[in-house]
Length: 602
DNA sequence: AGGAATATGAACTCACAC
DNA sequence: GTGTGAGTTCATATTCCT
Image 1 (cartoon, chains in turn purple, green, yellow):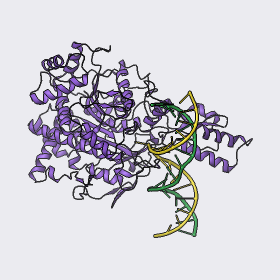
Image 2 (image 1 turned 60 degrees about the vertical axis):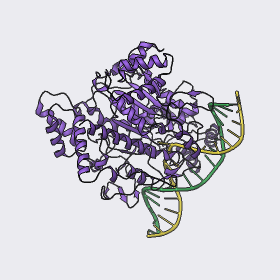
Image 3 (image 1 turned 90 degrees about the vertical axis):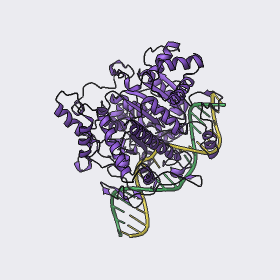
Image 4 (image 1 turned 30 degrees about the vertical axis):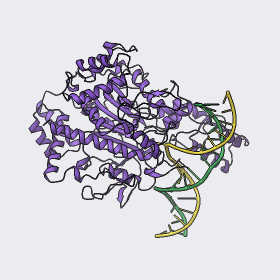
């Protein structure tokens, strides 16, 4: 999603060197306003595990860190050393360092913890928006505890198959791991077996194209047609260098009754390249309409997975054409409830009265980061007012062009207006007032919202994870923005055990933290300011602390890709959009580290 | 100082006619 | 095949105004 340009820090080369050259231990950045941000290194932490009242106390701090998986003895020791008043981030930093040095599991390894209690009904934040009561849309698809071992086995087999694993490998894994093995254990086994086979065939990591620096620039990966041959289906073609956008832009399929009548548009299964398979799962997002060749490059880096292009106009009343590359299962998806109104009239009933018959729009265009000026709205009003009845065709065209360009709606006689920030929030699937208050300006609200996920769309894709992680997931959220991924998972009812979030903009981090607190999250929220802080060493520490990441999710900056940018639409190598390579690096690091851990546990 | 307002096209795709 | 026109787009730089 999201935004890397919300503040005044430029991503020019000098800054890159400056930031990456910082000592890795607890760097402290200072904002232009002189305010010190202490969320580096260990990150700012929010945890509402027990008492919701604010204010640190020693015992509470101890419980807090113990709940994160550190041993009580270690936590006590570190707090004693640092002092109770020291920042939580400093304590976490020390804990991470110690736990790495000790290399011995604490008294409370995360796996030994009781599952977090995830009580949706206790949330008062949603104002009844999230109807997560028993829904026949998905309950039948869930994996339920079943006493019948044979049907249990079938379900696991089916799940594995749906996740893209070959049936034979799934059967072998179930035989070897025993009847009580969880899906996660089974997928671990299959992945380890695949890795072992790859090594046997002298086809190990080295084969995987690596990113290399060339003249200070990132070098593009070679195509490996032998790994993932050219293909063609449903309008998405790899025609030499260009991936074409599908029409209609419905991805691998939409929920039932979402506008797909042609069943051939629904993809039942796909074959992921072996090196792309999870765990961890990952999910990458960016604008669909990029300069030529960008999605080819992105796909090449992300294990040659075919992008899923979806227009969110099928999920809400506004268009949002985006590409998603992920290794999620695509079976058993279900939509968020309640389903959003999908026409302007239904979403904004009050506009109906003023909507002229010659404005035939039923959907809004893409919600962007800026809104129409008052002067433009005035020009439109004056242009129409000159005529008693229906304005002439030339005026209609002028008005309609501007309305389309600026997403204006009719709010009075001859009066058009841009959407209010709270209306944008709801369209994008966020709770009303999600970005309101806490010191964020109206301009920044539009900007952050314009850079965000459409929650219903993303949630539909992520819904396949729900049966796989009934006890919750650990998420690495990159370029988190205002937390579209977190909100989507929450609305799906997937408990958030740990969220490590990286977001450069302070106002956005504040939005996510407020949401986290208001929704009484039981897990841990750790945040970082810069993706470059997540070095391989740091990722190892985080993985060892939290027991690995189940999902790495994020959309890297689109600034240099988006069509609205008149100034610096420089493509993937642009100042901001180049951070895509950081996304790839981190996903690849996490995959390799977790594969190593699986190997050494065996 | 900082928020708000304002002006600023190009690149791309698609449909259609020829 | 080529040409043309219509439609769409997670934005930025500058100025204005408290």
